[in-house]
Amino acid sequence: MNKFCITGGIACGKSAVSDFLQKKGWEVIDTDRIAREQLEPGTEGHKKTVDAFGVNILNRSHLVDRTLLGRMVLSDPEKRKLLNSILHPLIRSVWNNRLQQHLRNSPGVPVVVVIPLLFETGGEDRFDSVACVASPFEFQLERLQQRGMNETEARQWIRAQEPVEEKIRKSHVVLWNNGSLELLNHQTELLEQVWLAQNE
Image (tube, rainbow, N blue to C red):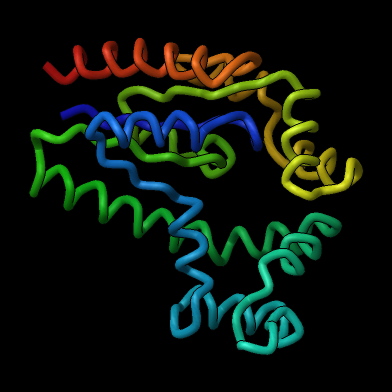
């Protein structure tokens, strides 16, 4: 069975694509969800992150304040590099283990891994096909502001990632999300057909 990956820029529609595939019966391994799991109390990621950044990143319930941590690393590239060095190896180990387990236990169910920072972390060689979900800069900016960010923060988060143009260049397939959800779903349906044909 082939190994498929979805990547793309921040606020470009990766979740919409993976949600569509999940509703069609695909197994979805979401590394954003895994990242959140790695910051839960009692995990290796939680311990290492608190050791590195201090107890000030914890809220009153002793949970990592992800908004505060995000702002810390957004404004300081060295801190962002440190956090990535802690979490990315843990995240990769988890998604790889889940992928291998799925391939062994449910070979008849197609599976896709969603990795926003695929190229930034050098994981593209592990997949047979990579689909990039991309949008114009102004669309990304608008969506991030709709999520509650101010314009300065939104611009910083977009620029903290590899440019969408580079992600497009390195991917096998591109889903261009600058219209309606229906249009994106139609592109995803075509992507599913291509990927399922590759699995035959």
